[in-house]
Image (cartoon, rainbow over all chains, first blue to last red; front, side, top):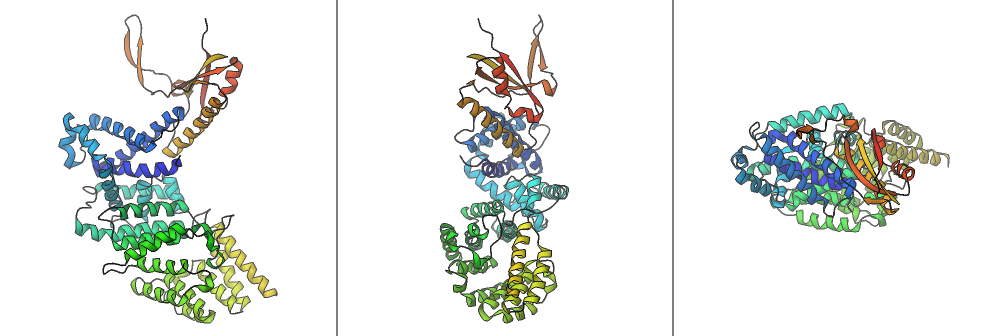
Length: 420
Length: 111
């Protein structure tokens, strides 16, 4: 049987999206309540009878019946989706209309509409991602707070405010409007990218890698890619990037959950099928006029994935790709990664020079991998005292125990090499 | 072997789907274990918290039951056990106790 959590996360998003479409976006919280109630009821029954063969189908039926109750009971007191009002008012059309809206094809559209609605430009990026996790992935407020290392109360406030903005929009996003769609698509892709990164590099209190977040981001990106209107080259590139990075996840931490540097990873543990899928998508993404950061980042991940070991990596190509990335979307973190690639290619002092040349270096002040990079390069240049000092600073900035242990280990390796 | 009815009373309702999932899994584990050991005659079902009560010679129908939440029967299971004390012992694994509920163990009357 599929783990229950993933069933819930998938079905919850589908059902909330579909019911919001029927109830109208102003009744978002009603849709959430109905879905939540359906889940609780289903589980109340399943605790006696066991989980049925097709739990997703069961949940859909329970939610449908609850929705029917609500529509009948409240149709005089509430207005539902304006374009469906007439059909929902008459007993003749109520059931067929609801069933039509809950057909697999309609739900697929509604999920995408909801995804685009959550990524409302009136909301800040972190609110968009929080909303996506909460509504489309069925994460509770606590789980969303956990994903972003935020306090429950703060996250509740953020989500409440975001939902209010969403509920004030006249309807769910119209994915049929080509112009609006292509304006909103980059916002959606960015949001899914941030979600993936939060899992991959996130500052979670306990875990260095939150695979569940990565998996959810990939699931949503795949949904987008699976839809005729969503399958753009940029979507392909984003999904390629996710696949190529996720392929390394099994090797990225040791059995104790501690981070491993790329050079120390057991490359046989990389997931071959994800690498192949990433490569296929990357090839497919190379069409149309647009070169996005996802294309370039996926290409970087692809170069890494194709090196038999760290030494065999084509660093010259990686530096060139980072140059391209700096041209599209410059940032100090990208510049730092570029400097590290330069060091691999031309030696530690060239790398340090490139770091010294990063324009807005001060923005990296609280990023632990900034002093860690300085330390690694100083160490390689044989200046252990300076390396040690930078490692200590990196340890001080570590955002979770796994990062701290990783950096502490590097620091003691540095001490050991000083004593040799 | 004799038959006993477990009546599940009270117990806080799950606060979220995640919580409901935890409760469900605990119950399934417990009931499956009892079934494996041959004690389950009928796994039973949950009951809606609402209903009607019909009472008196007039057979008056009222909304109900109006029991307090802690006394409300939320479900039942038919168990087989050698005697009442074994049946009571078997009920001790029920997850309802973690949530402030109780199990009433009642022997089915025999002729």
